[in-house]
Length: 386
Image (cartoon, rainbow, N blue to C red; front, side, top):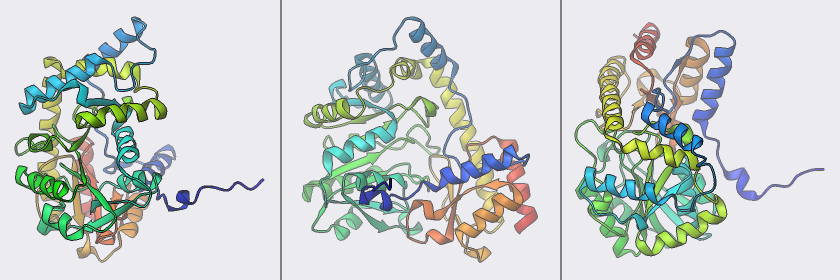
């Protein structure tokens, strides 16, 4: 029997960083020593209070389905987090807990985009955004951004690139792969353009908590109409627990819950009870210490790479990535990444994962691995390019 797949499948591009990680693990299994600077996953284990809360939940038998929008206790805890950390009054009814930020993106794509609709997004940007909207027969409308815009889509650019079928905008702050942050003024500009165009605005804030030169502002401080995506994966260090959330306008939260009932039934139950401990003071101390360590890694890797000829116009303000130009080396992104991995045991991510604009001239370094690994990686790079 020859299977026939939906046409969209041929247009869904692979997440190339996963392919890099798979190959790196194969080489490690064969005895190679690999320096990992590809994955966007913190190297720290989940903080102990969170793990303890998960064990307690399981022992208490809290392992059944929950409401599709999440347990009330966690929705309230997230609301309290916005009050304590952002001085914002966000009703728990506006918060929908999701199966990771990926689940949040899928829900919003289903809610907001109809077949044939266009969604503006920065190029380069998080690669899966394009694929989520393609899944619902919408299309990504990529807007080239560069160092002069700090790799961020601005309100004026969104207005200039708005097309007949454009229905909204998705941005990220801090952004993957660049670590750049949108200012409050830029968020105001984007909100005003989307309101004037009667379009939606989604802001991916999953790297909030991982800003190193002052906290990144939330779009919720300038608009109640925007949709926010956040996650327990990055700052909170719960990648494998698959838990995130959406903050939505009140009238949208009910519709999101209806879609979630059908797609996911509920977010992971044990992860939700574990996440209650993520906001505890003793946990936040640990998480803030880890943020300081990420800053230390950034401050080591940024000058080391620029000294070797990698072009990084600005020290990134957040996340844990360095998006580096490679024109100096006269190589394409695939050639460099393949050579570094296969010949020198250094895993980094090719720029073509993140879009089309100047993609062949960029690679992404992640500083989610410890200082000894980063130092070894830089030493290997010096032997090659120094």
